[in-house]
Structures are given as structure tokens and as C-alpha cells.
Image (cartoon, rainbow, N blue to C red; front, side, top):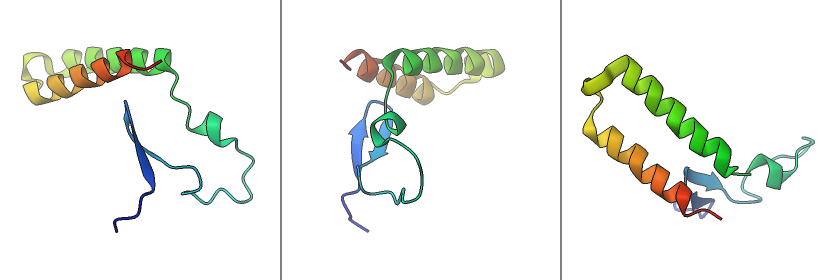
Length: 78
């Protein structure tokens, strides 16, 4: 519905502050939406290892390319 409710991030779209109803929840937005670079880099490697272990050469090249692109986006993070 064309509402501007998300921002692009290295891991995909993240909700903009105020776009989620968090009323009554004891959460800090900045912590909730944090993108710890080390965590995501490790997650990507673990995911790729798992996919390689399960699929090996049957893993579609398009998925490998998406993973590589995500790695590149993460390296550009501060």
C-alpha cells in the first residue's frame, strides 16, 4: 500500500521507527533494530556452510550470488 514504513539495510528492509505499534512493550527501538555487523557476518557464513553441507553443488548459483552480495553490503557497514 505505498506507505513509507521501511528502510533498506544490508540484511533487507527494516521497519522505520514509529511504523510498529510497540505500545505496552518494554523494548528499546535502537536495540531492537540494531544490526551488529559481527553477528550478521557470522550468520551468513553459518548459513552458507549449512547450505553447502545440505546441497553442495546443487545450491543454485542465484542463491550463492545473493549471499555474496549480502557479504559485500555488510563489509560496507560502519
